[in-house]
Length: 181
Image (cartoon, rainbow, N blue to C red; front, side, top):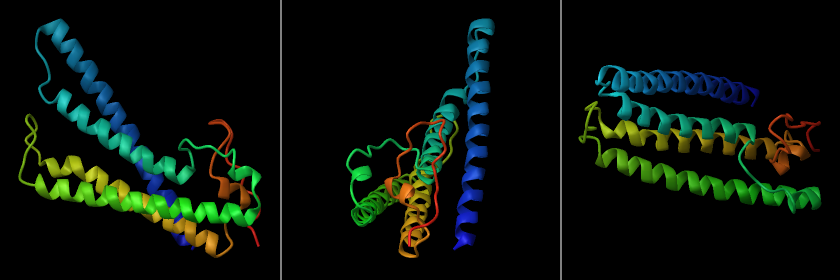
């Protein structure tokens, strides 16, 4: 299963790169548009729409990486105080609920992409399915991460710290002690 972990790590590294590139493009487009409007009474027509699309994709791709890193908001008040067996039950229940949410996101985004396949955006004239595709990519990616985490739990590769899944601070890396037996 180390192959899957390497794949997920590499995939999230690629997503980090894509989000950084998207952010850079957004900055250039928006700043360039502001300069063009105020300095030359003109503008970059595609700037607003492309920036909006990049922002949506950046947000969804960032959510995938946050899922992998356990960086989403959460509360460990109850989970940190219960025995390991109960932590495992909560972990499985939480992951099954998140898998259900991934299914809902996938189904909704897929349906919207299919509905809007022939519809084009106002300025770029690109298929709106590309816009809604971010939900499909996010749902599938997060589901893979969740299933991998459940597999790691089932095979005893998950540490007790990872069962809680909430970090104390953004600066502190998650402590990963030896796997549970």
